[in-house]
Length: 400
Ligand SMILES: *Cc1c(COP(=O)(O)O)cnc(C)c1O
Image 1 (cartoon, helix red, strand yellow):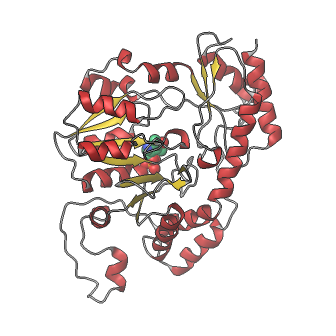
Image 2 (cartoon, protein in one colour; image 1 turned 90 degrees about the vertical axis):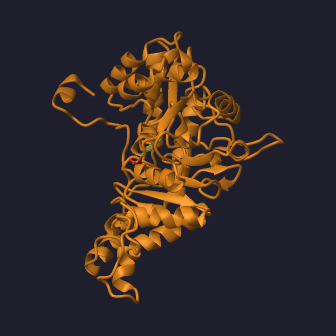
Image 3 (cartoon, helix red, strand yellow; image 1 turned 90 degrees about the horizontal axis):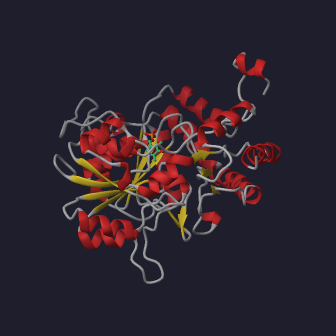
């Protein structure tokens, strides 16, 4: 992009994210508008039913964010004041803030360099150091599943949780559709939380889903999602009982997903696997064209690339790389390419650092990742010509 164009505030030629809504979104939304019922009703029920089927889950509870789903999951699992909950430092603040909502305390863990995932080894070490923890939140970082299930005779994270009496909550905000050796994320574990925020793999603008195998967690989440009312709104207006009659059994929240949003979600869901395949095309392109840059690491994909949702693709610029991270981001922007950073780890955030007296040297892998991490554009509408331009630009900057 020319300097003049940049000063005029011209949009980036290749933004970091671009939402695609060219399926049946309008069709579904029109039905909702015509029905005259915009909040939670039939479309949301249908979205829950189809999403649950897509992830091979047992129960699904639609909510207005993944943050809400995480909060409801922890609440339903009985996490309360003074409890300690293990959580990776390499994540978005929502993963940890919900622990504070309940008066519990997060205990931050380092992740594996290359994948940014929690591993059974890291968890086992943490359990030894922190024997009293009640639960762990596992993040399927970037869209790749953590080693939740046993493999090759080695216990998975869920096995360790069972053995040590820890509840396991999965933050799958990046991980739809994601598989672990062919099994859908959402089909195993106590509670799995998905995000439909605007820049996630499928979107409802704002939205989320709690998927669980456990009927009790589901029932509790459903009540707490809507003010702690014992019947949901839809049921109140269609059920056999009089519509004015309801009871409040707890001080619940206002987390229901409106039908207007669910309508968009239904259309997105129809194309989720196509979108995933397109992002995989972007990732393969990057792996093919960005190998061998001095001092630059690419993300490690452990399983089949078909199992990965490819929400993120990052570079880590090490000390040997031709330019540092900030300069790299600046030069990319000058070339019209948007980038982002995932994430500044939570142990570096003022609130957590000060409240829990956290030290960067206790998180060597997260530090190594974050110091040089840059996320590249990765979305279905990115053409091969655009990918070619991104790779040429990256190589131009980093070969220099
Ligand atoms: C986006 C995100 C969330 C929160 O999702 P919302 O739907 O915006 O609440 C939680 N965890 C991770 C890792 C995320 O990236």
